[in-house]
Length: 554
Ligand code: ADP
Image (cartoon, rainbow, N blue to C red; front, side):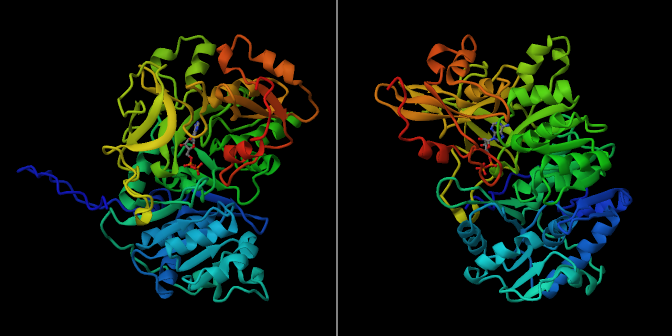
């Protein structure tokens, strides 16, 4: 167990500043007091638009905190949510963690067995959920013996007449029947705040247990201009779900900045998101590439532009250059490519040009913007070879990416998987280069790298070239067994509706863009790519699907 850390030496002269613990309750308290009139707008699961202010959010969060106390929830107890991005979910974020309990956000896209596994693993006592997930909860409830109370996040009129879920309460009844007379407790800032499980593509999911201190520091750092750059000038619509690494910290960094917050609920299709962007005058958003694909396609097909949307953060998987170019050149939207992971709260790097890049030709600037970016203060990183030897920051040496910092895990919840650290650094499982200016670029996940004749082929580059072809909507590259080279690249492509491209044309498209031996050995066409719970291509599924594929060169 790496907590508590060994006591550090004390100076004979200590600073004379107030020693206030960094607790997430202070964020909503601050937002309500200093930006009390700023709005939170939500597209509800019920279908309508709900709007209120930070002041009202704070009031209802305190009512909920009282209600949770009434349900017997104590400091350190786990309370789970299965919910979309919405105001009630935000209230739960603050009521649960603020009162000292631990908010466990569950990804509803996980397999029901995995949902039951993590509920039991976390020992959740209360589960708050959106109407959409009633069938999912009914399916797993019998397996979740520790849950004492279920709370359906809706009004009385939407409560089901009959359900298999025992001890089901109505969220709005709970809020109505409790007072907002509640003072946020003070406790050690290193106390657990939220719990997020990794998607567990291999083996069971593991929990990252964030502390109040790590969450507040991450919120400060991610709001900085060199990172997500959130301020009260903005209207922010987090497309990234609140069940995916706390929506990249936006439920904390937006309120502390006083910005208007807009929640899309369950409607994440291009049309619904576009309409909300326009009606609420959204200026800034964040999400994984697959959601931008839907939005860009919708806007392009309907010849629409954005009136206020000016900046977006794209991360979670590599942003294809074609997507970045479309957003910047056709829609006048600045793209901040960012990288991180569940184990990092999640923010690690964000990509922005520096003053010295201002005069560079557009193409050179784009090459920089394509990288995953610069470390955000608080995060340190290095690349090492297979023997753990540090590699130079020359932009071409690539190796295993290791990180450390106050919002990076020191161990998984319940010490699952043992000690993950290597000499105090967390191995990310990514392979990357770092250039002399400190810009990091992911070449691949180490488990996705193609090992051809003892050399590595990074799949992200190969996919980026394919998606630059006008007829290609999505592309994924995987290694397929080869008798001579061990593995060779196979490109799986989804063609844009109404367009066509042949295998030969695509392979020709690579010429001159990449070393010859990196060229994919074959191309297959698919209707869709398998996506995981967080919208990323599941390469393990693709590898399984095409493991018998016979390469022409084999
Ligand atoms: P999982 O996908 O396992 O649920 P995360 O959501 O934490 O876990 O994903 C973290 C991983 O996603 C990183 O280790 C990296 O491989 C990938 N990733 C995140 N952002 C980017 C990016 N901008 N470019 C390429 N890969 C990224």
